[in-house]
Length: 114
Length: 113
Image: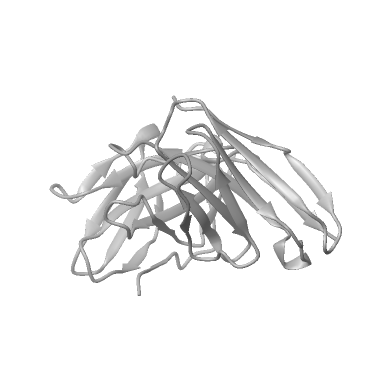
């Protein structure tokens, strides 16, 4: 069965510091992977997605993620965080070929100290 | 950008009560979804739909019914609400061509006493 694991429930960093949020997936098929972000009191928004090709994909607001097939990982990174990046970040795996079905990780709460 | 609205935004009911959550999207997306979000579980798919009149069972369907009356409207029904259904409910929609990009509504917070 497919699954997504985000091992860090909470991450706290200072503004201007670099960031990595970890994600591991388990899926026997071809993984299509995403990061969604949920700002306080809002719905989720797509941050970036990976289908194939270059393992490093760029997203909005300076975020990027790197896919590793050998490690079954899709970690999210940002070089310098801003206090407005404080949010919940979800790593997501598509598991339905033509259904749009997504499997979500439990999310990582990011807090950025100003 | 697609717009997805949900109503009500907050709802309190009692055990055994009847609740209907509404979702409307205004971009004529084919796919619509209902999720629940609980601490420690992330988002879990309850039901989804490919179009008007279509309904597909998600990963946590027990205790929930859904109905897609039009391309725009998708309803989630709790006919005998239980405290375990206290949660934050999100509706989302996506287009067939870009189905991985789901557009989420602002959520409905449901409390079952």
